Image (cartoon, rainbow, N blue to C red):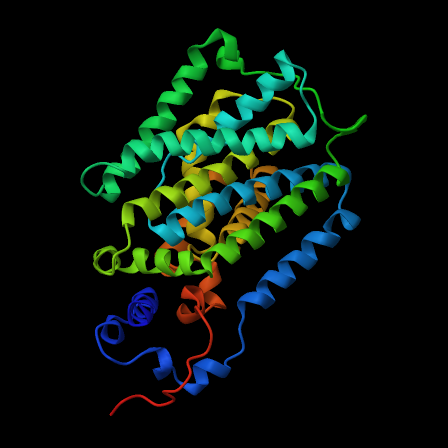
Length: 363
């Protein structure tokens, strides 16, 4: 079992030559072991800036920053699914929007707005929808191809969009407006610094949980799955079950983001379920860097920030400028902006403790 784990570690790190040999991870070079890690520095700086941002921003910019924080949480859900499990979910908005509609209906029809009820309900709705769709797409008799899953999730997102537009109970094209504010006891949580720090706190907690997940034995299997699915299946892992689990976790996180977004904006509309926002979250992760978690957050922040600036100053041509910028980054930095400071070895990560016994590679 120990040999299998070492082989999985080698597969996850993209070193099949080590995975198929008798040598374990003890071959790591000393320079690699002592190299300063950049990822914690990037994470710490991002958090520090986020904590002090409302202190220097005007009120309307704090509202915008809150929206960006929630979209960063949404991007995190997609990076977990695609960046670590290799599942191209082109319909991630299905879980985001369905949870938004769910909490909006709770607020409108049942007058339930308590934060400890609506946010767990949003995560649960996202989890249920992702389990249903993931079970259909991933747990078939034969392994699902990337194209099949991508088109299947895209179809689900498009169908949900059309259903919402044509269903009078959901408000049709207009959606559900004037959602009551989320409450904590008798206090209302409205847009501004309070909602900003609430969204930021949830993002940090979810981020830490995701970081723990991808650095665990389960995350090791996911990393190996992304690099070489057949080899992971050879080691005895049920690849499709692993994919279904991480797909469901990503759906729950997207649902949580959708619930936060619905109460922050005060209304929901069919676009929250559709193809446009599904593509948008893909761009966040591509731009920032997939398979790093922090890259998804940085991508969402930069794209939304640049879009806000360009739309305010170059109203006629800003989509063209943004499109060219995204294209250049994807062409020349396929690993995203995070690759400027983060090496491939640290992006993949290390698993387990330091090897004992064999300090040198076999001749």
